[in-house]
Length: 251
Image (cartoon, rainbow, N blue to C red):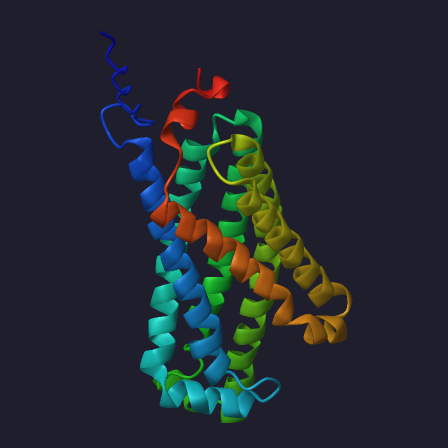
């Protein structure tokens, strides 16, 4: 009488620590936080408080909702922390496919996060000229409003540059996902499409602002679809553990 083979114990990507399935779930959770914070920050907070081309109205909106603006800053800082954790999870999950390309994705991710951290500093700087500090009371309010608005613009420009590196990261990660065998190829393709859309949006912002105005925000819809699909797959399905464990690149 034969007995079915016993399942192999799940290998831990971190010796004595987390299993690869747990890493996949954590990656999905971190990705979910990043997506939610990103959408809320850009559309519901900055999208509602920033009046394009009007420094005075923007300053008044922010001063009337200072707590909301500060919440947006704190959320952006949380996003950066989660993105660093997610970058490490990409290395854990994707290194069996191609270690060199996984490191390439990590380097682009870290560069993107460094630039995005600078953009977050500009969000902090918006509040400085709008504060009630004594040394600002002798300055023309219109000049202070303009300075605050310039910080808003600087944030948008730095964020656009960060998305150039992030777009390349998405393309590389999408390639690794497609070749992995333990993630669906469709998700890899969607991630690569997202990366191309990020690049098109950022370079249009530099080369032809009117064109970027026509493309935005529709150009980012494939990005939301691709990243959300990967996020939900990680949360719901996780990773095909037997395929990951037997991958030749894991040796």
